[in-house]
Image 1: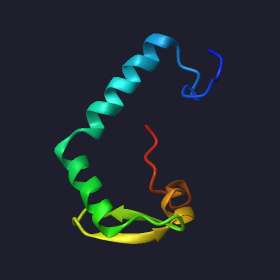
Image 2: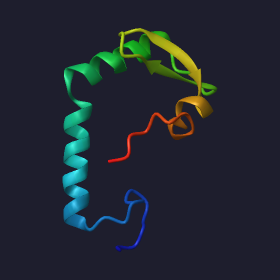
Image 3: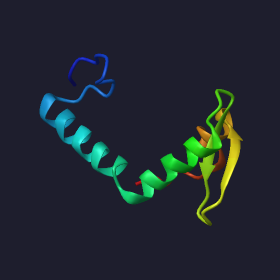
Image 4: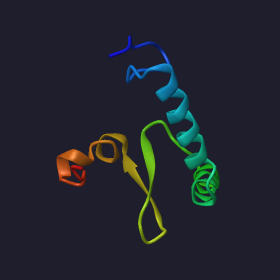
Length: 79
């Protein structure tokens, strides 16, 4: 495994890192992600919570601990 450095915490080789960054950027620039970013800015992000976009299209404010630990609620699918 490659050495872990800032900006490459997964230790990817340079070619894989470039490919991952390209995929991540492409995903961030989709219309759906742009819509969610716009909604977040309109609602206002706070340091004590995350804005959670539900499947029904609504937005709810959740605690950071709850939103970033889906594995504790068996919401993570093992592939």
